Image 1: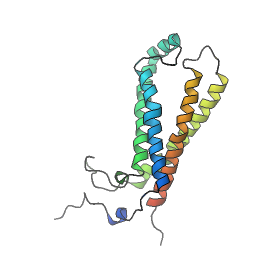
Image 2 (image 1 turned 90 degrees about the vertical axis):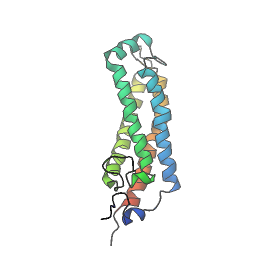
Image 3 (image 1 turned 120 degrees about the vertical axis):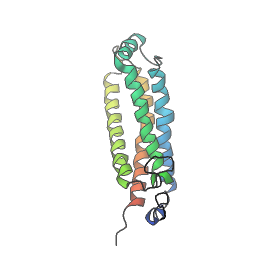
Length: 179
């Protein structure tokens, strides 16, 4: 009896490689999360009030802000990994080290649905942040400097746009062929 779970199907081997633009978009998206978003949020998660109103930060942090920041960092890593999966072979076939599904084809919807949903949510959050930043720019009640929102918006653009473009490429490349 031959065990074929570790060999990708012929259909997977026929998937064309991602375009150069899709690869750049995916890596830019992952970098925006890992280099742009996570480091500053980790600094805050470890209770360092960098670019923050110290007194307001302390109260906010003690009221659950620290856990919130750690959760955000973990959540930000997921779309970074997903961005890369959209352009790497392990986005088509689960790698050997993934228990129970190693060698099996990655269900297309597993990447396409969140690949379109997450950038839409990031875009909506970006728009929300613009409005809040404009309204509360000089507010003495603000916990963080409004300039952190400006920085955030700059790194959110490649994050959602890159993820969207990489998903669009993946969706087109992995679409079932029409007779």
